[in-house]
Length: 82
Image (cartoon, rainbow, N blue to C red):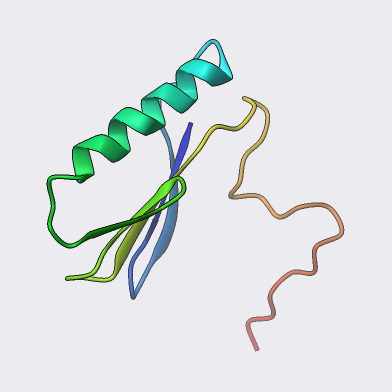
């Protein structure tokens, strides 16, 4: 599982402990999103929750162990820093 946290000033990806099956991973995502339901400013969209008070979005993804979302995909142009 990967957790992407986007704020008005940052965008980060963090790995979470893995699961033996995608079903267990999806169940964990459901549990995590359920925890956020107690917050009155939480807005849900699929596997993501956005907190309107500070503009932070947390998204959860079940990906194969070998897939790292932080790495650019082959054939994807690199962003220019100029």
